Image 1 (tube, rainbow, N blue to C red):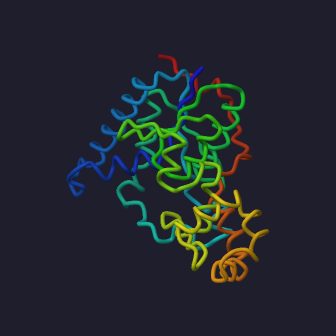
Image 2 (cartoon, rainbow, N blue to C red; image 1 turned 90 degrees about the vertical axis):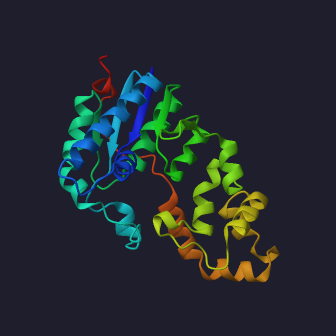
Image 3 (spheres, rainbow, N blue to C red; image 1 turned 45 degrees about the vertical axis):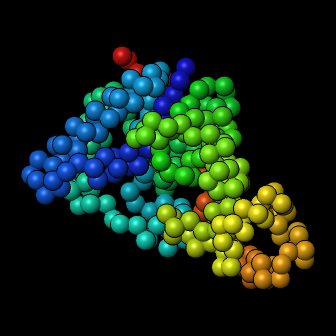
Length: 255
């Protein structure tokens, strides 16, 4: 068994942005065609036995309720895509890949829950996404792949890029900040310092236990922003407890 989980909007918005002539009357027809061809290529390359298109809840999610500024810096979905998104999803489903969406959750959490559960059962899982939060799944033996470049990431890629292991990525983002999620991080703690602290003390618990040994400016920043740090960690951590409510057998590919 091999399961392919597609980060739906991550894929669709990237393709939408790359289709020329956005003002053309048939632009969305071109987008739908490009998306279905891209999905067909993914099926051919990955040869999964099961595939799931995972979509975000378009309304409120738990992160936004917890942190209203969450992703407020992102450009809104283009109007034409918002209007015709259901057509795009229908096109993917016609290609044989059914979709799932869970109220109150982004695709990230749904994918993480499914991938970690399947991986724990020894089932091969590949996640198609360019979202860096997905890199935390590498420690669970999940393959995370950039469908557009054809590159599958490794734990060493995370170390090279961020200076921390995949499991430390949420706490790194909480400390250093994550502009893609509009998470500011701890003022006075940049990416280099965040990586050094986690390399030395393993996790936030170890860092806060060692505050008296840290440089004064870093210790003071962490003390003053302890509650914010906890909030940012929660925001940056993928949920693994989503009640997805599906039977995987319903997502078996028929051809």
